[in-house]
Length: 461
Image (tube, rainbow, N blue to C red; front, side, top):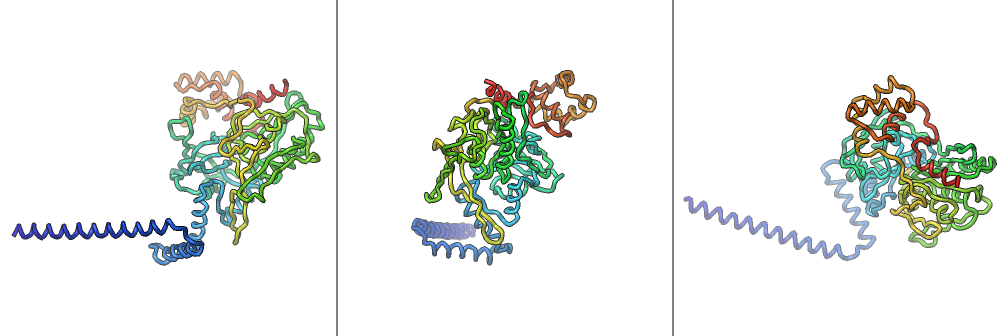
């Protein structure tokens, strides 16, 4: 009896194995046929049929009912993602309106320009005097989580949706930063982001005109022109154009602004696949405002796109010196194309080139005079977090409300006693930011701004 069972079991095993082998052979043969077919170029008509077939089966057979609009929007996004270009994207009606609002300079959120590099959500630049800037977000920070949810496979559009929200609400982002071994966590309270695009001030007993440009939006060129004309009227001996943390904006604004300083020659050229659309933007002598006043441009790792157009033009024409650190490296041009039903598509159509014919895409522009900004070191960041969590800083400023040398020394002495010493810069910066956080920030702060100090020194030469 036992022998019969063993024999029967063995036969069944052989049949199962044979069946599995047959299935494997069949699948392999079918896959081989599919591979052979896939190698042939499919006609446009065939591709349309293929897409419609896939859409039909999803609509009719997928486990959950899904709207056709959702599938088509997803298909468009998938098509654009196949281009492997972080700056090309599809926008719904809502997202299109958000973009237009952002270009007008008044929108809600955290105050950061983000992109995708190698499939990772990356900060291009925090906007000056916004929640993101104030908590310490930096260019190049990789956002790996939003509210503890991974950003892997998250589209740029969806990331923007999650980061924006009702003013007064907070969002937690997890950041991987080069040089940091641990993940950094930031709780950021959303605000209505109102950008004052141009701010200016006279320095060195009115001998130097300082102007900061925060974005190349629709009003940037006209706003900057007014300031430069005032500088010229006051007969300043030098001008400092500050493009740090400026993520860019409109190409025509960059061309106009470059022309304010350069009276002749190429400002920027754009080239793409369609040669008939290639353009060379040259300076118009009638549009120049300050062609001869000594000029320094300040730019850094948060200066991108249109900021790099202006910086590159001034550097290549030797119109002025670039002081700071290497720029971000976004050298492509997007055209926002209006589609149907209020949707739109930002499509990269060209790359731009500096007057010397150099593309800085993913390379950036190197400064004439390299001056890194002051920064917290690793111990500073670790201790600073603990100082705030234990409310050491908050309790200290309740009794010390004035920022001066004596207050700084008392603060450093307290931290040393707690085993949480900060570097001299970090202690001063931390204390000062806490004491003045409820007051309007000054346009400049020469106590900490070593790049601006160097620019002033260069102009005095």
